[in-house]
Length: 188
Image 1 (cartoon, rainbow, N blue to C red):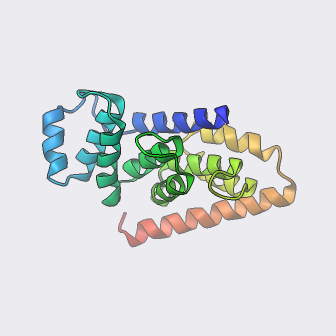
Image 2: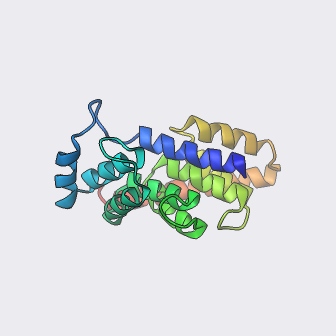
């Protein structure tokens, strides 16, 4: 359980580090003004500022509020961070089903930390039946850009039978094709 929590926290940090904050952190007042005007990227950045306590006191409830506004507009980074908050009970009661919902929305847009966190959820049976093949498939998608996911996939692979591995690789291909089709349909 402790290892799972560490993995989810690492996922949150990866998401935060991959956030589109410039080398110079944005000004809080400027970011808030854009966020209040409905800019999803600014809403995500404002949520991140509250989550990390950058320029404002750390406030998980406010972070959650701004992430949700951005996530509702389809911002994958915000969706992934909402998943982390629900998985860890930060600013909300812990809720694996809600974490899975937000991870899946972000993962369907190609967000590697969310894909990796879905792998963690399936590997540990959190909110879903334990399914090593499904966990492998999500880790495999994330492994393209996430070294931790690649390590988790490789460790999990050692425990799979040849049949399970074949099913996992097939599932990974299916997920990849579904994600690419959604991106194409959305014009991305």
